[in-house]
Length: 378
Ligand SMILES: [Zn+2]
Image (cartoon, rainbow, N blue to C red):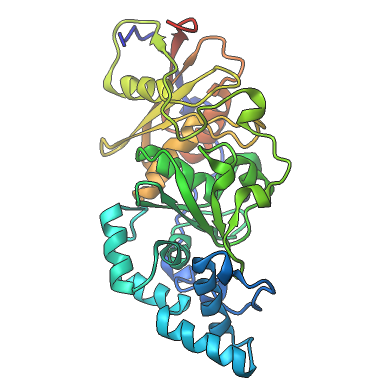
């Protein structure tokens, strides 16, 4: 596609009312890195999942052994089988932490295979064991409630996620752990998630968010002390993309067919423009993208991700911040930001982007480059 021009409006955030100081990343000393409480200590479910789901059977048997909630000859027999066939989840997490000194937010399919071999577990058990690893990187300075999540892609790769809170802003700017996982997968070219583990049952907001993903209704949700449960069981009578005639849901390839208004575009604007064209906005048709440059020259782009229910939508700035967190970067490192959206957009990102940036880094400069979308079918 031909790239059009740049006609940015330049806004200097330093001239705006300053917000709260940038949040400080949680330190490992503040966080429990081996949260075995999330993986054990619950009574066994009453249903026997072994007939329907061998993975659930292994997971639950492990939980029952760890919790010591079963008794009698039958329990002993099940415990013996579990002990012989699967490692305990808490043990997995302890061993896993030693294998991941780099604290990655993305595990390639090859690395997942290597880890499951070394730990003698399957990919869904690995997801569960990764939750405490993810939680250690959460940034919730308002609630101090740490969320860790991990999603398994169809490619075999695993994507971690955490919750992000932004002091000085409304709570609806919060990024939930499940939103982080999906956006992390999206940033890395994954087109479908098959399983997602999270440290607590997904909130209603996240069930709606996950329902927007490709084949989201079949997504297996793993929460502590529960058997794997398809999203469509957790979200019955759902409202989603299909109800609005959208078939290519979030995580599928997108092309907004946008062109920039002005001919010359710097590198940061081009990155924001590419993100805008790859954004997901099937309801408003107001695609948008953002790119930011840090003080050391590193750049991060984020694309808008819309939701059929509107409110769980994720802004392009939130998408870029997720990339920064995945790399362990601090928000006060941001030096320059470019936002690309349609002129006169009904679902504009300008005001919220300015507000959140002001609270994170008041000295950051925000430019807006406008684009137009081609008519349908062109
Ligand atoms: Zn949530």
